[in-house]
Amino acid sequence: MDIRDIEAGKSYACKFRTSTFIDDNGKPIEVNLKLGQAHPGKPGVYEGLGIIEIRDLEKELVQLWDNESQMRFTVSYNDLWDVDAVEWTDG
Figure 1: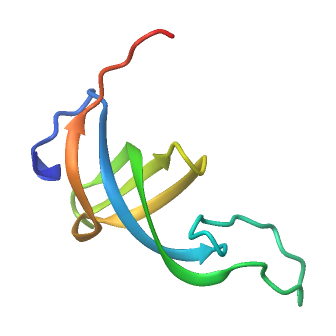
Figure 2: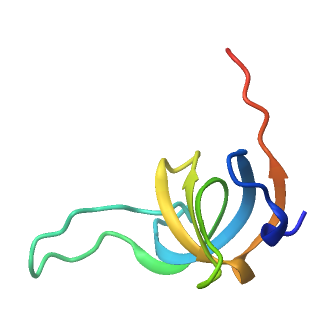
């Protein structure tokens, strides 16, 4: 499914990639640093599966929630693939 074809009001997820700070295992790091404090991660590329929260058709960006890292990322349409509908279940 193409990101441009999704319907407003329905839930979708996609695989994505983004440049961010990662740990030695390739997982993203989110840290609130003080001025001059060294960052514990290193720059790298992270790939994950995220729930799409917001889609900007003009800028071709999506904000998504990565379930594994529990972080939000904003990525371009060019850095996402395998868009599919989400089926929510209890349990």
